[in-house]
Amino acid sequence: MRDMGETKTIPWVLEKKKRHQKITMLTAYDYPLASLVDAAGVDMILVGDSLANVVLGLASTTEVGMSEMIHHAKAVRRGVKQALLIGDMPFESYQSDTVRAVDNARRFVQEAGCHAVKLEWFDRCLEVTERIVKAGIPVMGHVGLTPQTAEQLGGFKVQGKDADSAGRIIDDAKALEKAGCFSLVLECIPSPIAKIITEELSIPTIGIGAGPDCDGQVLVTHDLIGLFDRFKPKFVKQYVDSGALILEGLKRFRQEVEEGQFPDVPHSYSMNPEELAHLKKCE
Ligand code: KIV
Image (cartoon, rainbow, N blue to C red; front, top):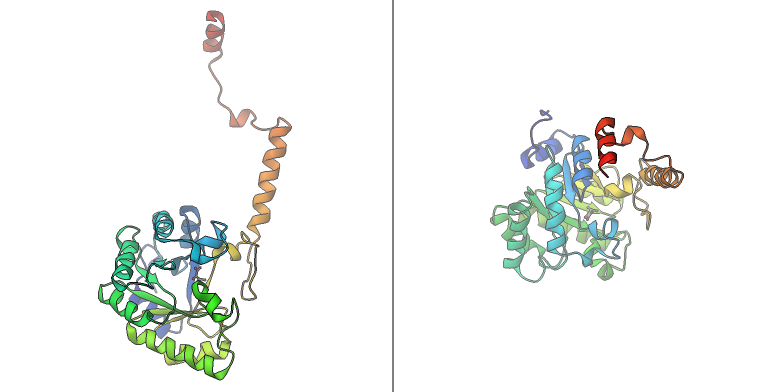
């Protein structure tokens, strides 16, 4: 469908839904991981505010702000060649003031080179989405479990389990499409609800804990590669245990240094023996 050398675009992602081809999205927060995710051919890279948990060791995503997000998004940008890059708007960067929301969205594009921003559902998010889209910045919405306001939703729980709340999520999703979102993350909702939303919207749905019928799937990369074990939601699938591999390498380093096996000759610089003899004579 595309040449691997060329950057993916929003029309390209929309076209994937039309063709019933699954869309992939993963998070990245720094240059090395972004380079790997991009080299794997993943369609979209999200600089998620999950940065707070999996990189900065904080308890909540509400604890990161614009400066951290922009700093990490810039590093990610340097590793991205082909994926669509999305900056996740952090808590309080878009909720309290619409003008500030547009300014902050613009920072992701101008300073960090993102192609789009993502924001979570809240009561005024339709107005904010419309303003950001009007400023020429594509917006990805996020409904269901919205971690920045998880406390108001009763904690980190599956959302939309009864008909009323499911109906509200479906309405929110439709309203976000109408407000101009190019795509929606559906987090932690029953699979049948995600299926209804996916069928009723013309924009792609990207699931995380939303079952197999979404147009695409996102995971937090640190969960997928085994670099974060403080909590593991049911929807996480760990594909490799890089944490164990890294630990093994670190332990071997410690052991070899302690036992005098490293650094050895192949990892050291030599000197012309005559120069060395001359030096010693002069000392
Ligand atoms: O911050 C994040 O990583 C996210 C994804 C879980 C969608 O919002």
